[in-house]
Every structure is written in structure tokens, then in C-alpha cells.
Image (tube, rainbow, N blue to C red; front, side):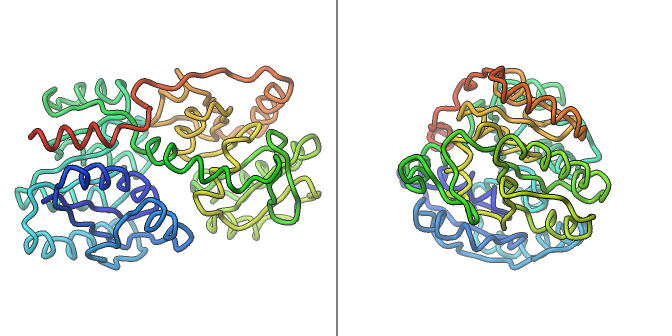
Length: 362
């Protein structure tokens, strides 16, 4: 039996295709939701449209500091695994639930598979980086999204026979849902907030990392830059609750009907906008990958990325936290000089099938 540990929205997106691939091969499975984060806006998508089963266990950990959250997952997960006695546990990505589950499994002698292994930003001020490093050191099967992940793992002393370059399971989910996302469009138009926009006639923004939104001065500079951009093209900004909280503390920004701010969107709604954006401005790791697959220019407001293939091969450009650089790069794109990327090898919608094949053969 294989157990899947999920704790946050991205984990569901990565686990769904793997669960389906293993199900088609008759592998018994259990889904354990730690409750680290739950997004009701995604439940219909992943429990209905992706045929993701309801979790067999919900640990209901909730929010808290990194230490508290990690400890709570460990304490609540251990008795569940002792009772289930799984042959393997699959963990996903780099959230606190991932590293907590890996530590529990390592101490219980349960084999660990890490989906999305080997990603490195080389910035240990990021809590996710610590989670990635520890999880990869403990895992028995390391499933990487691209060859740079293989290189990182070998550099850290991971045995080559544990490493499997399978591609990107996030792209499996995107490929599956892209036709459904198209349904939000009507004759080339889509409604956002109170306005209608045309395909390719807007910029899409998503920002949530503390490094960008917790500093009022920095956030104010970014918002002012976006407001300036909106003088030339519509800017759509579905705002993360964390960003919204900080935004309300900022000085009043002069906006216009071309600068549209709304609450967060469900995955399908966001994907429908993402695929036809003129450019996406983000600090999200997953969106760097999705825009590369979709061929949409991406400006990432970070000085580093754990997904460098999106820069070296894809459509992603790192602009740091420099609002001036952001304005310059947007201007270049609007003038028709956008970066042309290509899709990395194995980002073909079949990564989950490769994972299932590897696990069933062993």
C-alpha cells in the first residue's frame, strides 16, 4: 500500500495525477491530508474534475509557526502510519508537511518517495529550501522534474540509483485541465471583477511571498509600478489574503479601471487567464513552470529560483524586487520583444505514469 501525504494546495495538484496513475495499475492507496492548509475554492476541481478521492485521514493541523506546524504533523501522523503500515509514503513539493512526514517515515523505517525532488534555490533563508534539502536526504526514491535536479542531488551525495528524472507532475494536471479552463472564455472575452478583457490584452499578477508583501515600502513600490503599467494595458491582480492584508496598510494608490484587484481565484479560473496573458508577473514557483509550458512570458519578482530551467530554457526572467526593472521588462514585452522559450524534456503530461511504472516495477 502507498500513502500520499498532502498539506497545501500545490500538493493536491501534484498528487492527483499520481494517484490516478497508480489506481490504473491496481495499487492500493491511502490519502492523508495534514490540514496544514485547506482551500475550499479548489475542492470541486480536485475532488470532482480530477477524480481525486476524499482524504482517508485529515490530521487538521492548521496554521502555526514553522516549528509548531512541523511538530503537529509529526505527532499526528505517526500513529496513523503505525496503524496503516504502508509499504511506501509519497510526499510532494516542499511544504512543512512534506519534511515532517519524511522525518516520521525515516524513523519508522517506511520507504519515502519524494515527488519534485532536487529543486534548489541555494538560498537557505527560504524555509522551503530547508524542507527540500532534508526531505531529499531522507528519501529512498527521488523523482526529479528536470536534469538540473539530478545534478543537485548527486552533488549532495545522493546515490544515483535513487534518482529518477520523470518530468513535471504539475504539467500533468495542467494538461488535464486546460480544456476545462477554455470554457471560461466566451467569444475571446472573459469577465474579471467588473470588466471584460480580451485574449492577450492584459497582464496577470500574483504575489504572496513575505519577502515581497510584508515590507510596506516595497509592496507600495510594486503596486505603484503595476498602476503605471495599467496606463498602457489592463492589469489583473487576484490578490492573495496575505497580500491583501498588507495592501490595506499601504498608502492609498491611485488606480484606474485598467487596474483590477480581486480576491484569489480557483485554479481553473486562474489557468484560464494565465494561458492568454500578455505577461504574468509572479513570485510563485509553480507559475514559473506553468508559463514556461504555456509559452507565456513570465517576470518573477525574486532574485533566485529553485526552478532555473524555467529561466535557462523557458519564458521566465528574474527581475528581483526592482520595480524599475519590472517596468523595463514589461515595456520590452509590450513592444514585441518577448523572450521565446521552449518546453523542457519530459514536461509532456505523462510524468505521473513514469512514476507509477517505476514504483510498480519495484
